Image 1 (cartoon, rainbow, N blue to C red):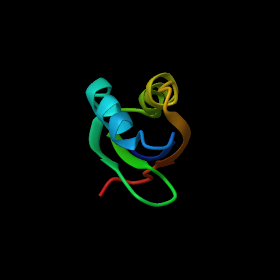
Image 2: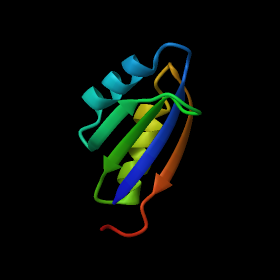
Image 3: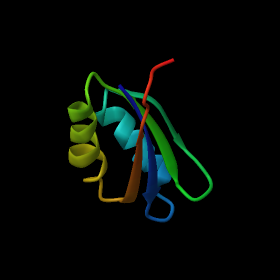
Image 4: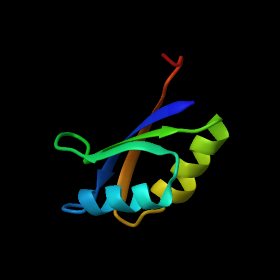
Length: 78
């Protein structure tokens, strides 16, 4: 199962947030700091929705510099 996470961070912390997430979450297959409405985009691949929930709620949203997340679950693999 794959998910795209759009993340808002505190001002000037997006690069550090991306590095912390990449170092803590082995399921990350892509992670970039970006310009725009959101500050970072993360792509996660995990065996089940429960794994993605655990990552989002216990790692990413607990980061002290993350202010908001939006998760989009991929419906069908290509």
